[in-house]
Every structure is written in C-alpha cells, then in structure tokens.
Image (cartoon, rainbow, N blue to C red):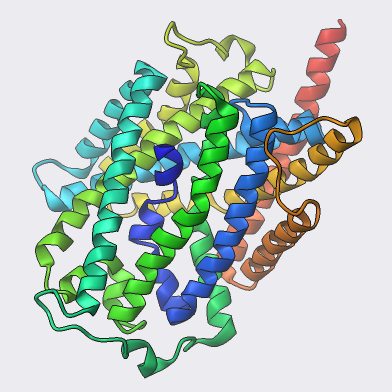
Length: 436
C-alpha cells in the first residue's frame, strides 16, 4: 500500500512540477487533471488483469497473453532497459544533490555508495525491501502533507512572511498561455506519473494480490487529487506562474516565500530520499521483469533462479549493473551525466500504457466470451478503455509537435520495433527448439 502511495511521489513532483507551471500557468491544474484521469484508468485496467492473474512480468506478461510472445518480448525488454537507465539517473541525481548539501565526498563516491546500499537491500529479501520502501514512502508523504499545511497557513497569514492573499492568479489570469500552454503542460506532467505501474509487478509477491491491488488502485484516485493537485494549487496561489524560482525548485520557492527557509533546506534531503526510494523500487521492478523474461525463455533460462529468500539474484545484479556503470559517468562527466541519462530514457511510459490498455481490452473480451468471473473489473468497459487509449494517442500527437519530445518518441518507437523483430526471431527459435 505504501509502495503504491509513494511510487509517483518523486522528482517529478518535487522538481518537475515547476516546469509544468512555467508552461501553462495556473491552468497546469487542468493538465494534471487530464493526465491523472488517464493514470487512474490505466491502473484500474492493470488492476483487473493483476487480480485475475498475478505475475511478476505484469504488463509484459499480459501483452504476451493478449498479443503474442513477440510483443511481450518487446514490451518487457523496453521497460527493463528503461528502468535500468532510470536507476542510473536516480543514483546520479541523488549523488549530485548530496555532493551539494554535504560536500565531504565527490559525486561519484555518493553514487557508488547508493548503488552498493540498494543492491544489497534488494538482494537481502523482498520483506526487507518492502520495509525500506515503506519508510521512504512515509517520509515523502509526510513532507508533502507538511507542505500543504504550511501553504494553507501561509495563505491565511499564519506564517512569518505576509500572506499574498488570493490575488496572484488574478494578475495574469487562469490560463495565461492559452490552450497551447495546457497542451505543453500536459506533455510535462504526464511523465511525472511514471512509476505507478510498478505496483502491478509488486502485487505478484503480496500475500493476497487480489485484495492488495484493489486497495492500491483505489488510493491512486485521492493520491493524485490530494498530493499532486494540492501541491501545485499552493504553488500557483502563492507565487506568480512565471516566477523563475518555481522553475528552479518549486517547493523550496514556496517555503522561502513563506518565511521558512530552514524547512526549504530540509527539502533537499527529502528529495534525496525520494530519488533513493524510486531507485530502490526500480531495482526491484526491473529485477522481477528480468526474472519473468528469463522464466519465459525471452532471456537465458538459467538466469531464472531465485535465492532461498525468493530473490531473483541474477535479475538484481543485471538491473544494478547500469547503476554501477553510471558511477563511471559521475567520475568522468559529473556535470553532464544526469542530462545524458534522462535524454536516453525516452517515452517508454506511453508504450507501457498503450500495451496495458490494448492487452486489457483483448483479455477482457476473451474473459467475457468464456464466461469467466473477474475479481476486479474496469469501470465503463469498453467505452472508458477506448477513451483512455484515445487520450494516450492525443498525448503522442501533442508530443510530435515539440521537437525534443518528437525525437524521444520516434527513438522509442524505433527501439520498440527493433525489439519486436528480435522477439519474433527468439519466439521462432524457441518454438523450433521445443519441437526438436
């Protein structure tokens, strides 16, 4: 439950929300609402599939059931590779912040220490991983709650600095950049929700996956409304939307304006904790995907082994390898390492969402044709499922209008197509070997 609560509360909220405000102004709340509705629907679809058939391969496994093993191969390896790069990026970002806050060691030493620690945690056992993730998520959630309370007190003139009142939005209007700004904001904020889908992977290792996934998907609705939209609402009420402080560090900007710079300084450590929480969860998620791919013959089957505590050790080591490679990047190119890693990750989230939606539509129709009862059902099927797919398609079309996003999308599509072709070859080879 805490993993589902904390999975989307990370750098996307603490840092990226300022970019959304800069793009759309106060109307970024509309962008968050639209992206949030898509996330809620996708998670409900994933919840339906997980409750019916829990599997560590999650959306890759369901894509295989619905569309064939070559699609499962492409989706699984794309998600695994991207998560490995995200692990490296998070280790780099956390090391960068720590080197600035506590400059006792160079950046690469912090990155190496983080990778050793969280590789060990994931090798230790899933129960211990869950314990660490619980407290990381608790810390993030607690800080956001404190921020919301401070923001309300500031608006009520109960903090050291004088309240700005509610007139900040009136100075520029709700949508100063118009519909194009809302669209640009949507492109920024949609990637902030990356990480929620990892709950579908984790559900396979819970004691009661059907009940766990149902509870987790239900919390997403109020989580998005309360944490994301509440935090952004405070930002646009307190500061002008074009204030450069929001783009640099939106939470710190609000706390400094409220006359609480010490609390703003503490935020740096909270952001480090948020990044390390995501790193921890992504090592876990990518290792389970690797294990699933090996178990189904899409990676060498000898790597589908688990320790006595149920940990897929080859998967953890393979997934952590990218993070350790990032240590070298931090040693040689500390200033540019983070930007390079973030640019490579591309738009995998949209591929994952699309595969989950299409898989859900096909598997739900198949279940209804066979008369099978489902423990958890998607709302408004099939209309809401198709509407969600159309929403993702609109985001892709919007992305094509922005040169940088278009480059990432086209690159991700090309890699996906190449992986699908390789998947066709591997599937045929496995089929031939089985027949022999």
